[in-house]
Image 1 (cartoon, each protein chain N blue to C red):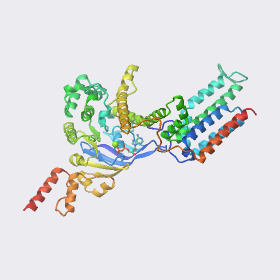
Image 2: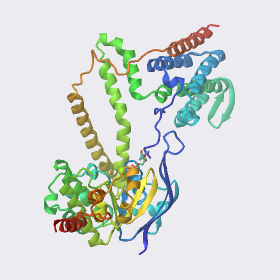
Image 3: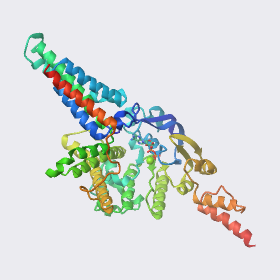
Image 4: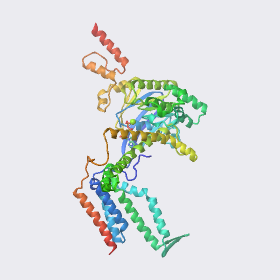
Length: 287
Length: 265
Ligand SMILES: Nc1ncnc2c1ncn2[C@@H]1O[C@H](COP(=O)(O)OP(=O)(O)O)[C@@H](O)[C@H]1O
Ligand SMILES: [Mg+2]
């Protein structure tokens, strides 16, 4: 399949030439294929947010190239329209709500696209339903009187309503309860299936990565240190712990069992796989 | 965009100037400023310029930062120069259409620009070399004798500290909100004044909501630690004059006295 995002030797420096200069990305080269579910992991400050802001042209490379949907983001005129095809959900997006009603806030993006009012309404309703909110109630709800979880859903709907080809989510489940996390990931998966979109997920939740992602990139201090399938990435446990990351809980459990001398696979990623292994183990020991 | 360095922002360092007591820096800069405004002949100018130059060298700040303050105020310098040059009557030097430049005007213009440039260079030194919290502690200590006159010195200093503390946070938050709304196609610069004002709502509503939430959180945090301003509070890092502070105050006072004495030579 063809690449939808191509990054060549991307370097980004904040406040260059001052005492506050920070090299937040250092010669990163990366290819993201169309339609893939791509996860980006790395400890806090490793450059994940800086990287994804290059994908819709909010930031431009200090050195190197970023091509998104065939557009070089260094090109000012084309960059300006990138938001129509690349949706970016910021960290804590609920803090960016501003309209009087949830409906109006979700409609902000589609209206900026210059759609007719009927199209706007249709998109808003669909986006709200996708995140599990009632479209009719939304035209009466003020975003400022809702719980944090519902506000987050509303904010994410505001980006889904753009129907982006590439959907980027920057730590979307941070601070949500376990059920909220699972629901949100299901909504994302649903959107992906419906639109055939490419998903880029920045997260600290390794179970999420193991469950959802097809490819994973690992950042450390602005450098790309690994890229591969979740199974490849999580087989390099020692390297991950060295840069402050961890394995998914089922994988950790299997490794512990192996340490205790049990004959289990250690390349297990999900709870379902772990259950299978344990069933086999119990079956054997019970007989 | 907003994240660059703002004028006079603290630049961490380890120079003599960085280590001075904040009160010394405030008093020293006041003395230097009076000297710069008071010199009346070239000897006085040399003395004031020497003091400024020494202070800049001792601060070990990057030249780019020091010149940056001049650069961002260059318009002020140019306008002052032109006004002085064209509006001072005297012996005619040159004529540019309706505008006349006099000999006296030329001298006055050069003099005032020199004064302004020196003032700008020295005025930012305290904020460039002192963390805001220390600076307000110094100011509080300087104005605390006024407490007897009913001036709430501590509360004023506290408000200043809080304001300074939150400026970078607000700028950072503004940058995030602008980026987020841009990602949904917001434009912040187009259309009639009414449309322009409306286009700013997506920025200001979240920003104010965030500031209020933050203020509320901070108030709760302070209350839950039984914060009470004013009398009987001590500081974790008490201000203390060292030998260097006495030397610096001595030198600046000597320059001030010298400049004033030179007026009468
Ligand atoms: N606006 C900014 N100005 C200066 N430095 C920044 C800015 N944003 C991020 N940084 C720095 O860039 C580095 C990477 O930050 P970020 O991309 O936010 O990491 P992450 O999202 O992985 O936590 C950090 O060292 C951070 O301090
Ligand atoms: Mg981040």
